[in-house]
Length: 122
Image 1 (cartoon, rainbow, N blue to C red):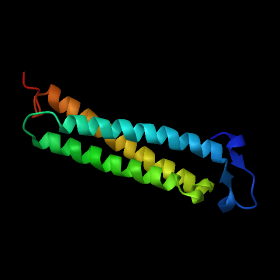
Image 2: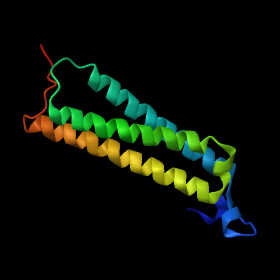
Image 3: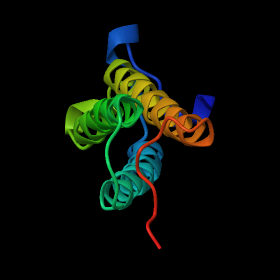
């Protein structure tokens, strides 16, 4: 984190970040949440049968999305200008991003190995 993004304060628990810095984070997280939701809705609309590997992928993606939305909601609060709360929101978002990524990777490899059940019908 850049030093100029942190406003000096009396104590460590009272350190604040600049609102412009937080607004950039909100924008970036909002874009990622939009892409994640778009991927999940597109994938769910594909025809075919669901297999257990698909359900595991969807569970990971859905839980990751829930964490991403939670982080976005937390960053929209004025209290997220406190450094401690901002950092916690970013950690929650990163955990969600990792879970969504793992779900997508699992879905891709399950499909490549023939375990995925959703197949485009032509």
